[in-house]
Amino acid sequence: MPLVHGFDPPERFVTGTVGPPGSRAFFLQARSGARLVSVAVEKQQVAALAERVEELLDQVMASEEHESVIPAVAPLALDDTAPLEQPIDEEFRAGTMTLSWDPADERVVIEVFPFSEAAVVSPDQLDEDIEDLVEPEPEEVMLVRLPPGAARAFVKRSAQVLDAGRPSCPFCGNPIDPEGHLCVRANGFRRRDP
View 1 (tube, rainbow, N blue to C red):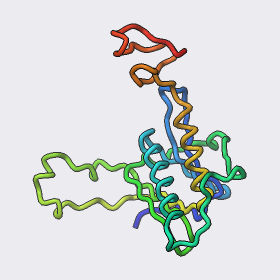
View 2 (cartoon, rainbow, N blue to C red):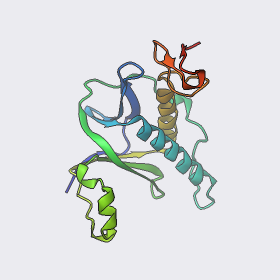
View 3 (tube, one colour):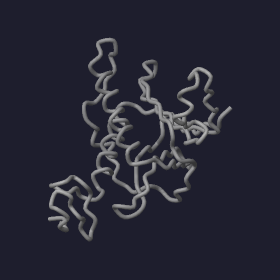
């Protein structure tokens, strides 16, 4: 039986970073009372999770089956621009994440499982019968149940955190470091942020 870090609902659930743009470490952080759990994630995982939460809320909002009151945008009262809470002790590094809607109590349900080398399928294993592969039981899981307004606020903050990184080159789209970068579209000339 895995250790479950459950928050239903959390007092705070946010995405945040540590470090300067270009070498930021991303975290999901949940808090209820004195209990604080930080899970390391990749930037792409944050972007995918925020996008999927937004899509899920939009689907539920458009559904005629649900009479839920789902805000179209994040309520201003739920804006959270504060930094991550200290201490940031990484509980685990995120691997698989699941997302669902619980219609019984109108919550977005996010499960974050640790990354496991044993769960990675190598190309030679794909030749084997996929049914014979056994997914290992995770040792722990972060389980967060968010009301719709808090879920919209999570999406809004995640977008702000993602946008706070290095600016993109208007020509090639690659990130620009403070020292500039060698732009492939400018035949190797160094470009700086305008």
